Length: 142
Image (cartoon, rainbow, N blue to C red; front, side, top):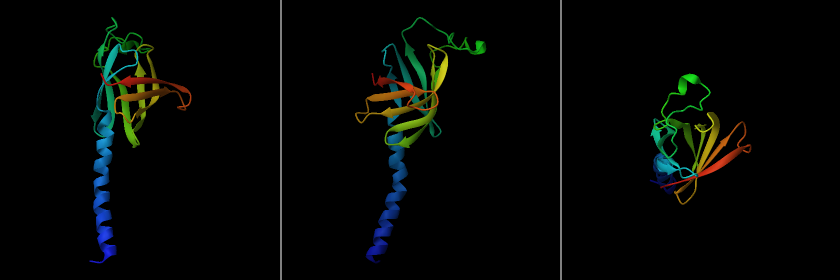
């Protein structure tokens, strides 16, 4: 085997493992997160190749999604409600193409999530249209 063939063989093997490393990075977001107001937690989990989040705990006395503009959904319980939907990992600790539902206002926004290098801080950016026109909230691991 020539040096060129040896190099190509190593490169081929390493490329085969790169999706495994990317997958490991993508799953770093999975777990329980404390919201910025410190009045509730959200559990982020994976379904298929997408990421979702549901309300795990809350301190407010509201039990139902009564701020939802759809009257049929106003009887949904807040605990267990999926508020993060359809996120994909795009690399560099960024998950995008998803949405976030704000049960305090009953509105849904496009959303992008960025995990800080410490793996303990998650920046949640909700926006309409372009991410530059939005608001960021910071979640932490409890």
